[in-house]
Image 1 (cartoon, rainbow, N blue to C red):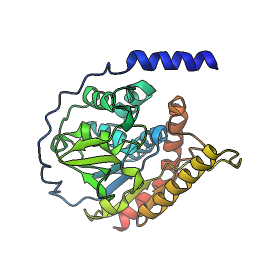
Image 2 (cartoon, one colour):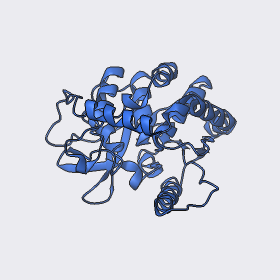
Image 3 (cartoon, rainbow, N blue to C red):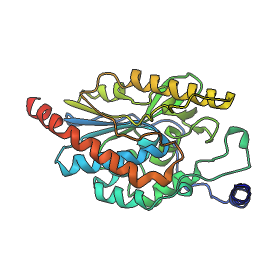
Image 4 (cartoon, rainbow, N blue to C red):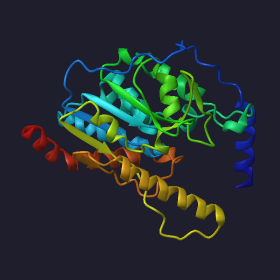
Amino acid sequence: MSKIRLALFISIIFTAGCVSVPNISIPPHEPPPLQLSTHPRVALVLGGGGARGYAHVGVIKALENAGIPIDLIVATSAGSIIGALYADSSNADFVNRVMRKTHFFDFADFTIVSSGNGLISGRQLQHFLINNMRARSFNELKIPLVVVATDLTSGKEKPLSSGPIAPAVNASCAMPGAVHPVKIYGMTLIDGGMVAQLPVNIAKRYHPDIIIAVSLEADLPKKMPGSFLEVFQRAFDISIHAIADFSGKGADVYIHPKVGSAGIFDVHLKHTLIQAGEKAADQAIPNIKKLLIKK
């Protein structure tokens, strides 16, 4: 174990600061937010959860195979990565192929510069999106997308639906303590899951016929904590569960893939998580079709 830790430490030192700043033109002021020209039938809300976000890939794949239309995507944190890829391509197989090839360092880059704000700068995530997406700005997407961050100043949720995509998704994924906050449009933004783990209320603003919400909350460990760090971790997990329950109220359909105890960094479980998402969505499809016929 000590050798593994040493190798990880050495890799961090050698990779620190090696990722270039993405060449993205960010306007000084936030462009006007998304305005839909047509009434959305189905809004898909994708919750956060770190590596558990792979389950969203399976959910989208099952919905597309069943012919369920997705007219709007509202996403937080890890959900914003999958949501952006699908909003750009409108092709579940493409998203599936891209995400199955990914590894932890496709999204994360460690930095020892300004590490007081977090060990991960977020630049690698932005490069990942730029390299795998055609669109650069929200208005170029095939499916309307809203990603949700948290305003560190006001403490309120901040929907982002215009301007450049990559820094907006980066902001939505900026887990405090791990990832640098993102400064954009005069705001300092962090992970949207801090206040809107499942942002159903944002989807409601667009008055869709049906809201499908995908929650990725992991099971609490059966073993009770034995140290102060374990107590803190469990308390944090309980808080996230409560935020998800509160922010997810009002959806017409809830899909909760069985992610077990998968942690936010368990990227190695990606194939299992994708399958879990597909299975959970398959079970919900009959109800979704009934609602579509009814509405």
